[in-house]
Structure formats: structure tokens, C-alpha cells
Length: 219
Image 1 (spheres, rainbow, N blue to C red):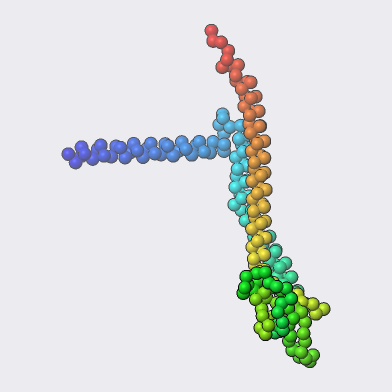
Image 2: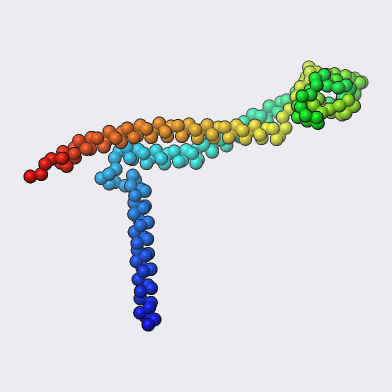
């Protein structure tokens, strides 16, 4: 009983494994038919296969590398510019003397946008100084603020910090990678249309050679 029961149980597994192997092998052959010599493959199919491989490499390798290199280059330039601005400009801790000359249109307490206001600070060897400078929108009279001046004494924006430098680098890198990927995709669309025309032309020439053998009347 055990032998009789075991026999039928083994055969379906063997048949199932064999059929599964044949099915997988058939799918593999169908998917990779452009890479092997066969009667159905044409020159346009070979070009198509290499184009797909090239596009895959460009999208997965070249585009990210372009983004990385562009981002690193932008980071170096932005960091050098920030260092030059820090060397040229000077920071002063001052006190707001009066209300801003321009009424803030931003919500109350929003300090992201700067406005001109009169500030006062004490400079060693020169005494008390007063000037108009850019202050945060939420600054009020009597509040201490940090203001920046250039070598000519003009109020300027503070030099970009590390966060701003990295944000600029990441933005440039993403734009470069996206632009490269878009160019590759558009090139792929154009190449595919051209390849389709060549493939149809090859099929037409092949049918001109083989068609008469199928259409000739048989005696």
C-alpha cells in the first residue's frame, strides 16, 4: 500500500518539475531571442537589443554619475563663494533703533524675509555707530540682531551657510541627473521610431523574396 501510494505521488512531482523547467527555458529563449542567431532575427533587432542595453546603462549609471559630479562641482563653487563673501563681509551685533522702514507683509513673527531698519552698535575705537541695515521681518525696536556690511559699509545679506550650500548642490545634482535621463529617454524614443521604420523595410524586402513561394498556385 505504501509503495503503491508513493508511486503516484512521486510521478506528478517529476512531471511538474520537468514542465516547469521547460516553461522557464522557453520564456528565457523568447526573451533573449535578439541576442542569439535565429531565422527571425534581423539587423534592426540586433541594433534594438544593443540600444536597450545602452539606454539601461545610461539611465542606471551615467545619469546618477552626472548628477553626483554636477552636485559636487556646484558644492565646491558655492562653498568657495561663501568663503569669499565671509572674508569680504563683516558681521555686527546691533540693536534695532526704530521700526522697519517697510511694513512687513509677511505674517506676524515671520523672520525669513528681511526689511530695512535703523540699527545702532558700538564699534571698538570708533564709538557708537548708526546705520540702515537689513533686519528680520519680526525684529522690533530694542531687539538685538545680527547685520552684515560689505567693505564699503553697505548693508548686505549674510553669506550662505553650510545648509544653503548643500541645498544648492543637491538641487543642481538632481537637475543634472534629471536632464540627462530626459535626454536619454528622448533619444530612445527617436531611435525606436527609426528602428521601427528599418524593421518594417527589412520585413518588406524579406517578403518580396519569400512571398512568391507562398502565393504561387500549386499544381
